[in-house]
Length: 213
Ligand SMILES: [Mg+2]
Image 1 (cartoon, rainbow, N blue to C red):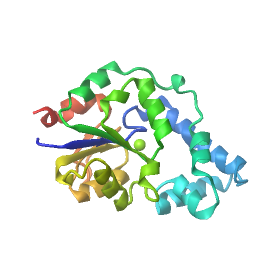
Image 2 (image 1 turned 30 degrees about the horizontal axis):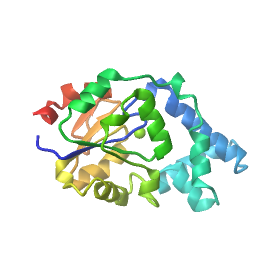
Image 3 (image 1 turned 135 degrees about the horizontal axis):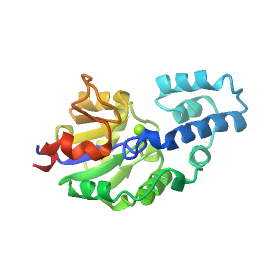
């Protein structure tokens, strides 16, 4: 397969959802909404669902409806001991480095969190660049503009020469429509917007040997 750039989501893609970190981030988001914005615990799940559907992420929904400081929010929700959830991933590192294309992170998370996670996994030097929530402003995945922005930031490769890995079918769908080769991570199964599905990032080479051909 002749590709130029592969985009990787971060959370629940480069590390498994089962390590529990993303659930903790979700709880920190609930806590932020309760402590900082005074929202009742009962109201939060429905609000978050509404923001997820209508704005892409809770952050974007809160920004549209409250006066919040984005940096403060991001620092609060990512204030976790990463050692509990992540460790050096030398096998993953070797696999990533062997992919003969540009490798970019494309995440709705922020740069600080992304760098901390990559450092903890010791894969920080496997990537040519990071597209994060700051560089996507005011958009985020799954808005189409976010994918255009990611392509621009990565040097404007033809989307037909790009692949995208994410744990969310919702995030993969606009990429598929734009012409990316799409890979769902974290679950098996088929979907019209998904070219391949792998349960774990370590399965990539087996599932998509064409990347190395
Ligand atoms: Mg994810």
